[in-house]
Image (tube, rainbow, N blue to C red; front, top):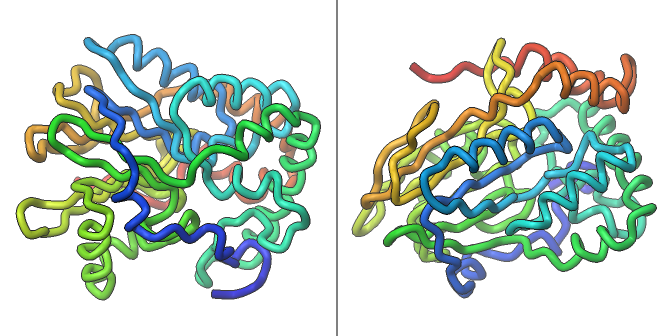
Length: 308
């Protein structure tokens, strides 16, 4: 791993899948896993509206990077106040907010195929967010005590909630490319064993995936919601969350299945695009680091298609 800021993966990010197995399980009937909100308040509004439409109780867990573009004080305070009313774990964005210095930059641990200009702009975005966060010490104190991992149980299904992958906060082994790489599969199967879970729900890599892996007595699932606060598919304008429930979904779903009697789906988050675009541009006008890295994705989605 490179030691360049933004590409490094600090040792403090590494927990190991065995740490997930040691956690007490939080029981839920319906679990919404929301990763990569990225400061998008209209997306959070839409998620809360989706919760209100469910037929039974819903447990929300935010699995990191709920901050990013929200460098205005009102946006920073609003996102964190509302997210921290629920279960949450840190992403690399939150993990780096209280760290002295900028050795890890944004903490993304970007792989080598990501262009160095993107990495540098991410470091600049995080530095500005960190400046905003410094004006909110009470929020920083609450972020500082959030865990890096969580464990839930829905029905008989055990779920490991991570930001990156089974071993590291900023790991990329649950990225869609890594999930489809046969060379990575033995590590993934072993991670299920070490974590003692049936499902890993993750985010971090900004592209969604749902993959199956044969285990001794059942099938393991890795589901990556991509981003809740940005588009995930070409020429689309909605985020995604992961829904895991003892009840079937009654609203719109993109993909999913039933495993061990539990419904596992990706749900679209159809936020107010115009409101989000205006909020984004108020913080990140044309030519700014976030505009250069993300505006085309916000408007047109990534070059990534939903599988037929």
